[in-house]
Image (cartoon, rainbow, N blue to C red; front, side):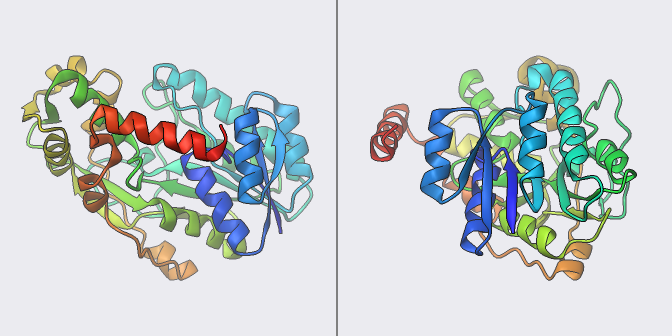
Length: 313
């Protein structure tokens, strides 16, 4: 198949590109920059110029492909509401190019959109979008599906390797700046997690075997206590680990405070049953204990410079 991937040069999208190419598929990757184009060509993908806000580029990329995987999202959480609206328009544009065909559209959502305090499953509906939770990926996907598009949803937890760990990477930056690693209350609220490579493999399984209007969970670990995550950050940065009240967390974490307090464990039991997907990679705590974010600043700068030199960037 020829697969159009949005976010093709991002953390998750680039792994998806490699997964599909290694399985013999062709990939058309969306990018806005020359650097992104070089990385796609190096990976063996074709380049499609455009952005999430260039709806015509999205429609033409989808029209030229046998299926679409939408992994792109603008991760500027200071403009979360606006970026959720960009996401909504992008999904509608991708869907419009697929109407009247049986070509699949895989929409990316998050396990954090499920109701907190209980184990979320694939059969659970996402919380309706609102001012407090404006992301409407699944609602928009359902609207597109009602017009005959073959839509399925992949819900992501904290996606990790030793380079990035989802929202935890932001928590590391806060801890480095504040000089303490924090959690809220007793810290027993839980975040699910999956390794980047297992996540990329699931996207391929969904494209090749997924069902219309099905929801899939890219979850390897149902729920890692946030206190354990904060303690690992404290060890890595060699700073104290502290408990904060919800009121203190607002000032300490900023926008991240809303997410740090969530208890959103999730299961992938049905996903594994339906698709035969089995996560096999390292767990979150193992990757966090060896995270590159904990390297000294001079070592990180040297490594990044070396990587850029080797890539010709």
